[in-house]
Length: 504
Image (cartoon, rainbow, N blue to C red; front, side, top):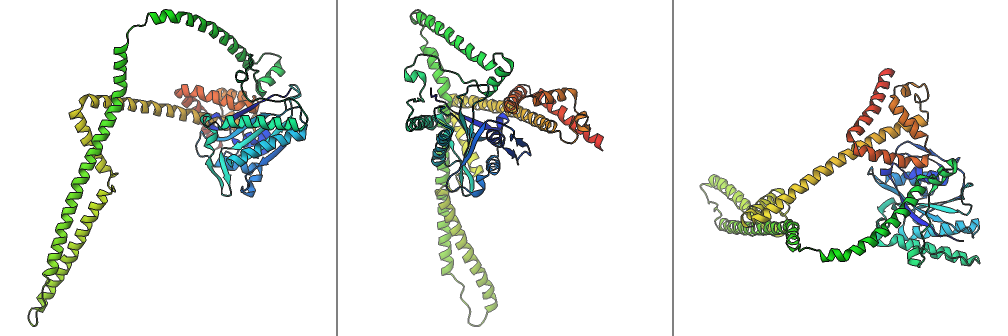
């Protein structure tokens, strides 16, 4: 029976992941991350049936190379928590042969590329030997930016927000495309992208465990934590249904016992509305102070310009006359002073009129000194005319300062956690790769404390696909314990410094 599955996931640095690693793993390829120097080698990975890179028609030639493409995608993102790629994971019908499944995945990727201008890397994976033999699926890794002849440009924001409906549109389109291929190949099976509830089917939806949980159950023969969580969720849903029934039976009694809260509601509204009203009133006072200043300033400079212009024409009429015989030397001095006075008066008149025009057109509206003066006048007037609103505004500004301080503290905690994770990850990479001095018995590894050694070796025992989640869990724990994060990082850096001392 043909099944429908399409999920959209993000590849984010905040989860310790990278586009280069994701591309290498899905394609069974080897890619060196030029940003971090890490080598992602999955050439021994089995189960990759085919890979295709789909690009816009105006894409540069270098983009056809997988390593160049995803390194460019990484380098186009500057933030440490950037989303560097997006993945469309799709189920391919076992009713189709391998070539038709590949055509279905590539055609779907081509439509994504044509609509959004992004780059797509299609990798088709065969079913796991120890899992469902019909689990044919494809990973379509796409860039988060549009790819043009000039390289990666703007973000494909339309795929970020479910409110745009773009993801749901692609879910529907993949169902249509899959049904078209099933029909073309003479198969009566059909799929539906809608939820079971929307289809009118009364049963619990099946749950996808994912490769990590499936692999764990296969290796140990025990129930995975993910399956346990799914079953726990079902039991909780049944329990909630029972509680809802009891709540509904109590609604009648509750309605009969409601007290009059109108006074409390009015007070709540006042407390919530007062700061907004205060801000609007203060802005009005600010605007009025600005306009009053502009009127006064324009009037002053216009008057000054008119007076200087009148003085200019008066000077022009009283030009010193050159004597015929005597006093030429004195006249030259007087005339030179007159010329300077004439041109200086003209320049000052033009400058005054230009200033009046600039003020009128708002060219001084954003001058910091002016804005500070208008803000002070607005605040003084608010204190004088509406003291209750001034108090409400002060309280909100204090709350905002406290909120900003809390956000700054959280950001600092995040920074400490990120630095600690970065140091730990770097050490884990060197240890796993047996870099010079980090192999067993190496001087650099010997300098590392037993606590850090245990953490690094324990981390490296996990499969690469699980490490991003482990790092994210470590990061969340360190965020809640900033002092512990700083200590953890200090231990790693102290060990590094100790090794440098030995080298010297």
